[in-house]
Picture 1 (cartoon, rainbow, N blue to C red):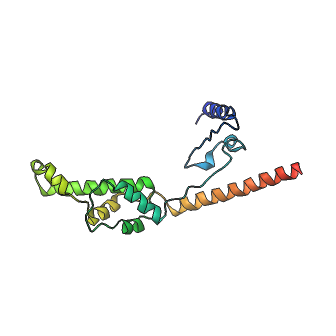
Picture 2: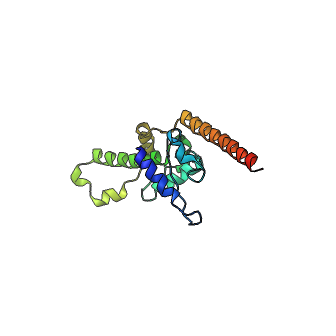
Picture 3: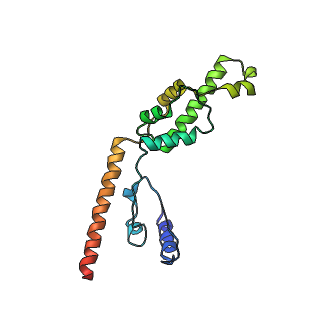
Length: 173
């Protein structure tokens, strides 16, 4: 990001009235390289760690992405949620998409293209095995190292923030 862009963003943020009801929210995967000017009080002075989805969140994400995907009776989304530790929301979406493609590939391999009519497509169901095969291709993007890194970064920012406010309290009496 260029200095000009950062300066423009800071100028726009500084121009926001305090009681205007405007809240500026931003997200990054690299908080360590943020310009310190962005993190000063009154700007992005609150950092919130959004953790990787836990098992319950992964189940909900899977439910969202399989809402319109016909699933076979042998598919247990709770089981898949348990097996997908380290998967982000985007990883889970890719997993569902890949499992659906596995189903389609299986149908194509078993029949001639002309036979793939609407009737056959309506009968297709994504099976447990399709998810298992998809998991061989779609790997988790969140590592334990990444989780530790973000947690440590958040802790260090919390300590910095406490120190900053302790100094403010000291100066104001």
